[in-house]
Amino acid sequence: MEQSTFGEVNQLGGVFVNGRPLPNAIRLRIVELAQLGVRPCDISRQLRVSHGCVSKILARYNETGSILPGAIGGSKPRVTTPNVVKHIKMYKERDPGIFAWEIRDKLLADGVCDKYNVPSVSSISRILRNKIGNGGNGQVPPQAYENKNQIMPQTAAPAPIYNQFYPYSCPAPSMPPVPSPQMHPQAHLPQFTPSKPPPVSSCVTPCMMRAWAASSHSVNDILGFRSPVPQSMAQPAPMQHENMSSIGQNYNMNYYHSMKPPMSPMYLQS
DNA sequence: GCCGTAACGGTTGAC
DNA sequence: TTGTCAACCGTTACG
Image (cartoon, rainbow, N blue to C red; front, side):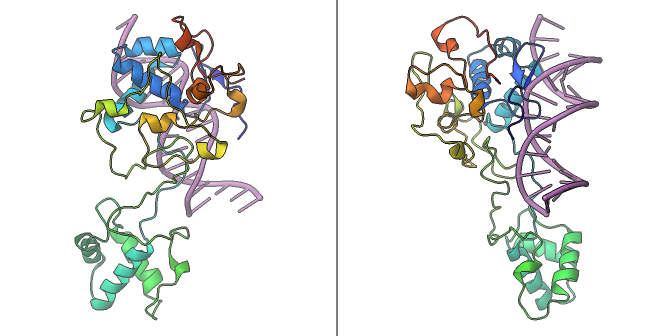
């Protein structure tokens, strides 16, 4: 979407795009300032981000260790994967009188599913009724699977269920949590200081922007990509240091070269 | 004045 | 191709 090239202005004068996450650089800055002991209200004013948003981002960070937004859009993952259907069929063939809830228990006991992705009893019943009851040849046709995009055989470990190409690099809700900030708080802290420009990727393309690794949540990983700010929103002033382009296009660079708080929105929309 | 959070209007992407 | 749905977003307002 080329929408929201202009965005909206909040009560603090900051520019935001309704419905879209703040740039990672700002999210990162919020966490960074909080780690430095800056109060949320001051972070809010300084970055011109609503205090509610600051609160949310910090709460998320404290909970997950990630500054990144969650997965937007999409549907819940299907749990009736080919492997699950295969096992259900196998259980039914071994014991035609087996109950759906028994199948459910066996799926858990055999490690086919875990408690997060095990199908409901009703789902199992539907599978038995629709896909196995009239199958009959011992083969489960690929087209019989509910999820036509499900191509990976299910294993005991839940597969990444959200697309890995979400431009804002989000963890799947059911994925194992990232290391807790309580355990390794520094692991998620910015690896740069105002006097030490952050490392950057030397080549970032819009395509790459959409290719966050699902588990890549370190700040270095984050900073290795340009934020999802559209190219048209990038700061027009040419960068003196190419190596700062990654963060410079998301941050108000004046912040690093002057102690004055930024007078312009942190991420210009136009 | 600060903080947490519900409500709201919006975007997104799988189905 | 289009519509629906359910996830998420940040802002605002309230307590």
